[in-house]
Amino acid sequence: MREIVAHLAAAPPVPLNSCRMSEATAKSAAKSSAKVRPDTFTIADLADEFALTTRAIRFYEDQGLLSPERRGTRRIYGQRERVRLKLVLRGKRLGMSLAEIADILDLYQADNSERSQLEKFLEVLGSRRNLLEQQREDIDVVLEEISTIERDCRRRLKNSAK
Image (tube, rainbow, N blue to C red; front, side, top):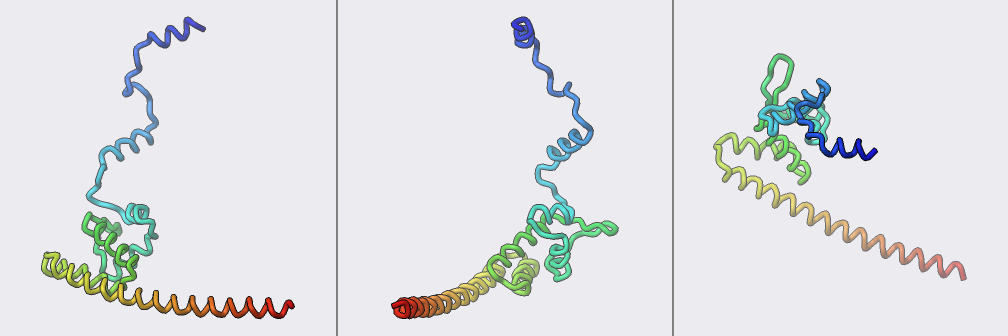
């Protein structure tokens, strides 16, 4: 046993490129090292990255929010579409309608400056904030009413048990 351990310890290291890889593993490794930040994406790539269905991405395309390049029947999305999709999702998370999101995206396309886009975005965000604050006030009123009713119900149960 000592002889085997001594032999292994004394053996020169095996070069990494001499190890055999399956063809699929080699292709996968080449693909991942070649595409650190790809310039183009398939619809499936974007769906995976943003946890969406391909149908949702096609819907955004139908709404005019995305316009991928076409190669035959395939959609090829560039960095522009990827960023636009990210902005669409951010707008949706903030409660913006698709029409509001489209207006903001179209402003940038119209004059290539951020100023008008940012001003519109601030306007939309202000409206959204006002709506959410009103909803919060409404929720607080309803919660207080629920608390009052719960207290009344508990008091009645306590009195009826006597």
